[in-house]
Length: 108
Image (cartoon, rainbow, N blue to C red; front, side):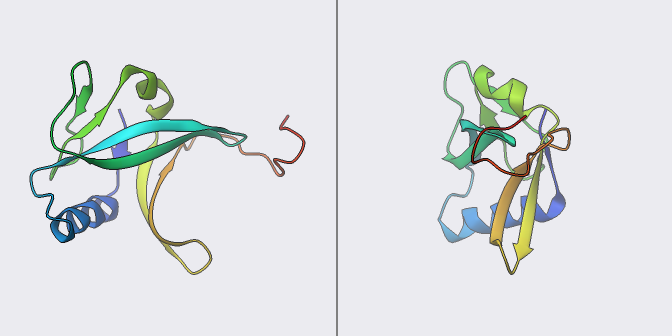
C-alpha cells in the first residue's frame, strides 16, 4: 500500500478543485523503469476501472492502480516537493531504492 504525506494530499485536493475534479481520485500507473527504480505517473480518474485496486489511504480521495503497479508501488511515499532546483509538485519515492550515481553506462 502506498503512503501519502499530508502536504501531498492537500496539494492533490487543491489541484482537483482548480481543475473541477471534485469527487475524482488519482490513478497511479507504472511509467517505466530507470536505474533508480520504477517510475510512476499520476492522473485524475473518476472511478475505478474493472480489476483495479482501490486504495483508501488518503482521506480526501481514492487512489487507483492495477496489479502490475501494486508491487513496485508497495512501501512508496507520495510527497509534495517545493525545491528551487526541481520545482513544485509531487514525487513518488521508494525509501528502499538504492539509486546510482550515473545512468550513462548502466547501473551496478
